[in-house]
Image (tube, rainbow, N blue to C red):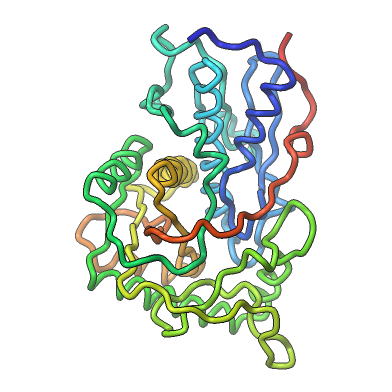
Length: 340
């Protein structure tokens, strides 16, 4: 496939694809710039949309940015280029998390160690626009072994590991998630930060209509974005529902725990989510225990394979549910313009 000419319309599509990535509380903590000298898209952190109390180290922000990088890889390949990825390319610019260059078309010899499988994007571009978290109950239908195998390989292709937790481990992971929920609900600063990102209007945050219900059985601790009000009431919460009795929880890990690993974990996460979407598999992210350092380390305690857990992913079949909004591509793009 011959690459298209990079014009304003294609640049808008590339940025729209990046913005469609998942982020904590839908903060969309990124900005983009087209470097006219290198014709590479720069992915930069937007710390003003970071989560000061929930994500003080910026790990979640980096994972979100990594997911955006993967969407850029898919979109760049869709328009005929080979994505050339560099992670943290300049130490003097800590907010510059990655660049995605427009390399020669696949097969012409371009490539990079940060993008080990440049030809593995088939069928994923359409999934970018359909993927979003489903916070609804799933059915009891199990994922086929073939699909789980492909999701595992997608994570591996991006420098991460993905495994489906066994029933006993699943119970333990959910207990840690429930403990994190309890702590967060009891922390006034984190509770206020979470409520602040529940918004009726605007492109950021989560609209009340997209909030998921609580599990009426107390078995599956879904995130409570609103928490208990100052008067002790719980107004605005969706009615409780009965969730699946045996949730499928996949554990995404990396061998190390550096900023580059967080960015790779985000790419692995988005590859897994897009591939799952292409198979009609729904997903929601259980991030709560990762927000407390002691609980995060405890997530790995019961497994023999060393590594650092970066995400718990609930997988299954069920309703698609409402999507959260996204900002316009023009609002996320700083300076520069399409190459001529």
